[in-house]
Amino acid sequence: MFATNQHKYNNTLLVRLILYCDIKGISLWQVVKVRLLIIPIVLLLLTTQVNIFSQNVSTYIFTQTTGPYSSISGTSLTLESGSADDGYYPLTNIGFTFNFHGSDFTQFSAATNGRIRLGAIGETSTTNTPLSSYANCIAFGGGDGKIVSSPIYLLSGSAPYRVLTIQYGPYYVYYSGTGDYVNVQIKLYETTNVIEIIYGTSVRSSTYTRQVGISGATTSDFSVRTNSTSWVSSTAAGNNTTTMTWSTLYYPSNGLLYRWTPPPPPPLHHSRNSCYSYCFQYNINGCRFVMDSG
Image (cartoon, rainbow, N blue to C red; front, side):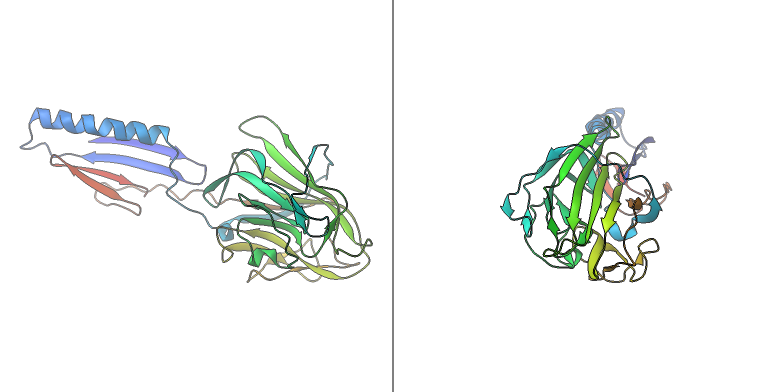
């Protein structure tokens, strides 16, 4: 028997190679030839990132906590279309490969209405529920808002633990008002693929509903937060159109942090007599070659 295991945490990298070979009646040359055929496959799998398991953002682990909001000095984005009211910015490099729901992304696009998208250009829509409209979206206050100045971004740290910070400050919650605004950052973490939204200082004078959360490869896969009386005690929403209430009483406090963490990879199971999910079998010269993710 010949066996090779390869493990990779970056959103499931679990490949096991098992060769069962009953050499009874098989010549020595046949056995050698089989092994020669297997070697390139083993080398390929050892040097190639293999994603055989795709995650849903609905399975991400959500945490709400507090932490210091630290303003950054970074590179300012330049509007590609629209205005400070309804506009979006060009695709911009993240600075590293960010894995989101099992897919790799290297670029983001910010919009002026309280959200960014990964791997896709922004949009000028004023919808108050962007997570029901756009895939691969991260919303900190999605709705018909407005920016005072263009968002800035900063890549910090060293590989493989760099952090991209995208800062909106201040962000007007409503496009025609100046009495409601908040400073906010979105953070993307290399390797761990964690997403954070952290809120800074704010001013409140009116009541609005805004959307907070993330959407996956499709809008039917989502992790949306909701609460009409508390941002500190937000709960998971049952649909992708649910919102948070912003008012003089209910708002994100300075330092409030929302975090989404990818789930851990599935446990490793193996049996010589069974072939689990994502299983492929090949018969080469009388030998059974099995590759499985189980």
